[in-house]
Length: 271
Image (cartoon, rainbow, N blue to C red; front, side, top):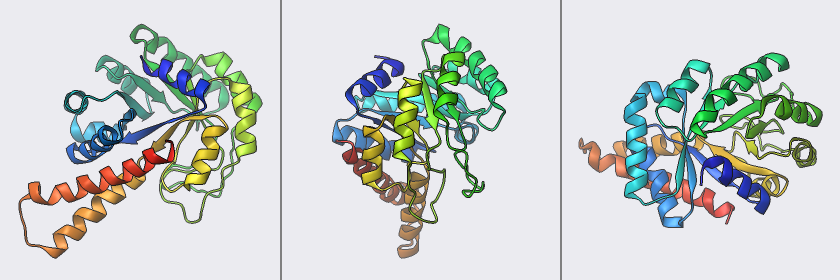
């Protein structure tokens, strides 16, 4: 089952899947251990930054090898692809899914770029995700409002042929200064207009009750990234402070375990 088929299945069942970003061997290991222990599939995500840090081929090879070792059902996704070139490289490297993020461009330009990516992804049978509306990225203002409009979503999907759509309904990337409030009523309208699986970015820090409400209203994929980085680094730093061990193989497992617990708790929200 490819990811497009999986997301369609989730949409029909009124359920969702977590999409977790990984940054190194340790965060990948923690994520996959949680998936294996909970016996639940998930999506592994890489951003440009992580690809440049690890290298495209090593990152893909590591992910594929560990998915096989843990005997899991998982898909590899490009998160927030920012160029056609990066999308092409990831498709060529065997990604199951790519996101092209042209959401900060005018609607017509966003459509043009996404339509090109859909054409590129077709020979690979790869899933294509796009974003419509304003979901604040790290360092961007969370005060700005740019929620996805149902009519725009309907037009955008028809014009581009994308398989999944990330929507702006009150979430943001990074840390929340106060508890986010998702516009569930708007989400329901977008679902009816767009007809395709919807994606919630900025899943870190959203209360469980709102996550479940969003899934019930049409969200099929939920991204988590910031919490993973924070959890891993906080636990590793704390461990370094309390002992003089220099063997990273004895320090990093603390971070792996913390990531495993985090992702395991996320998975439980949807079970």
